[in-house]
Length: 129
Image 1 (cartoon, rainbow, N blue to C red):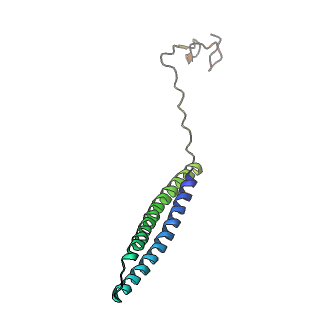
Image 2 (image 1 turned 90 degrees about the vertical axis):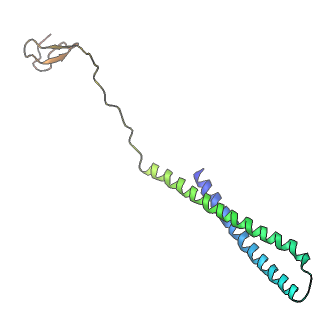
Image 3 (image 1 turned 90 degrees about the horizontal axis):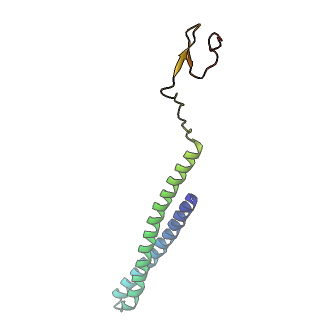
C-alpha cells in the first residue's frame, strides 16, 4: 500500500505538471491573441469563455502538481519508515525470570549452604536431606 501511495503521488504530479504546462501555454497564447484583436479594434468577447477555461485548466493543473508533490513525499517517508524498520528489527525484550518471593529456604546441616525448600540433596556437599 505504501508503494501505491508513492505511485499515486507521482502520477498526480505528472498529470498536474502536464495540465499546468498546456493550460499555461494555451492561456498565454489566447491572451496574446485577444490583445492583438483589441489593438486591431475587434471584439474579444467570443474568446473570453475559452480564456476562462484555459486559466481554470492551468489552476487545476497547478493544484494537482502540488498535491502530487505532497502525496509523493508522504509515500517516500512511509516507504523509508517501513524499509528501515525491516532492515533493523528491534529485538524482542524478554522479562527476566523473577524468583518467587516468600520461597521458604532451608540450610544443609552438614555445610550450612542455603538450599531450596524442595531440595533432597545439598548442592554443595551432596548430603542427603
